[in-house]
Image (cartoon, rainbow, N blue to C red; front, side, top):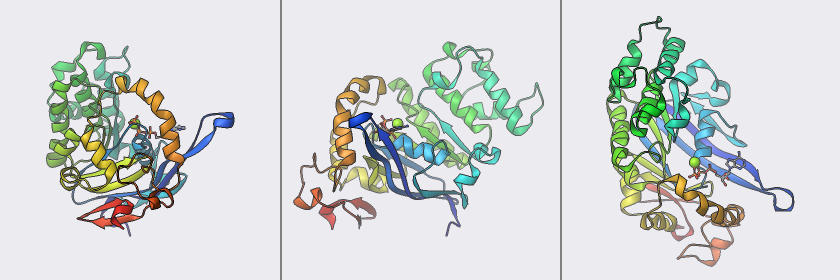
Length: 319
Ligand SMILES: Nc1ncnc2c1ncn2[C@@H]1O[C@H](COP(=O)(O)OP(=O)(O)OP(=O)(O)O)[C@@H](O)[C@H]1O
Ligand SMILES: [Mg+2]
């Protein structure tokens, strides 16, 4: 069943309880999500969607940081439940986080992370770090650019490159990058996303790229899954999905230009949280309350997935 797959997730669901007392509600932050990545053909698979749609929760499930409420994940044909936390898995599947200034302790020299990782995983002798040099080279940095530096002495773009370089020391097959460029100056963003493309093409690394930014997603990904309130609502090749979105939610997402800077989304999120809970808990299609093409059936029953024009669309319009 799983032969030929690097990663396979089937019917993943994660239930969270939100709020307290009378306003407690349970939501499916991830709801029956399935995806798979081929072993033979590395690709960049994007998860896109508004804030609070469940993207990071999918990432945490794949990394083994959270356990699914139901559903299964296999990595190289083996259940993640058995693999998580093992040296082998941590070597092969590397996270890249949003804020490089949080990835690195401000009081520790950046190079010490490289040296530790290299010693732990490759057993390189103290004083000799060939993998550090090689991985820095892959991201376009020179060892002299990080030598003896503290995180505050590097730019956000440089530091994010360094965090990707550190992830590469162990020669991973899969990177899970959760909004890796949203905290980086717009002028440097392209250079980091280009790096992902090069890593896929030249190092054969598969990447799960999580973003609000459809422009970078369009530019680097092979496939995209549009997430809405825990569900994949449209999945297919990035060209098809973004050139000609079929789901009304994808159409909305494409026409609005979301602010990629999470710091400025914060206040809006508080106002949105009501809508968020309402949509998460509503019957039928989660988008029915906002959909310009809503029909009676959308408020009654959850739509199935329909195969239309080489993609899957979870919408009653296509039944
Ligand atoms: N540990 C948790 N306990 C309770 N609820 C949670 C927890 N983690 C996430 N959630 C909720 O699950 C939903 C999905 O959250 P998630 O962080 O996965 O979304 P996201 O798409 O990554 O959002 P963003 O774009 O803002 O990063 C949200 O409603 C969030 O509040
Ligand atoms: Mg997130």
